Amino acid sequence: MTGTIDAQAVMDVLATVPDPEIPAVSIVDLGIVRGVDAARGAVRITPTYTGCPATLAIEQAIRHTLAAHGMGHLSVETVLSPPWTTDWISAEGHEKLRAYGIAPPSGPASLPAGCPRCGSMRTVEVSRFGSTPCKALWRCQDCLEPFDRFKCH
Image (cartoon, rainbow, N blue to C red; front, side, top):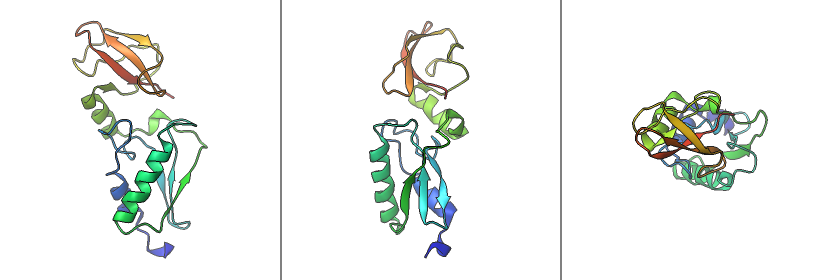
């Protein structure tokens, strides 16, 4: 059965699975899906950080979606090394994050984040901790709106 796995078809199906914490982006957009190992019959994933509380929900969503598309025979393997990095977020994922109101990662945290609402670079970090552990809370000094910024790592 593993010889008949179409890795691209599996990736296309997984691209429909939204991230449980940021439903505007898929788990493929975020780079959580590392790939499909056809020889092992497995989907390989890496959480955004070790201990991410959404990992179980992501695994369940993957299994449910694969089963709904006749691919329930595939297993899900969590791979922690190398660790996930914001470099794995796709260009489309960056745009989806921005449209959703989250500043995508854009270099060192010491540099200003572009406001996803008005585009201003006159922004300040309010707290290293945002709505989830992988984001920080920022505020725009022009439109005065708060926003999350993905932490680079």
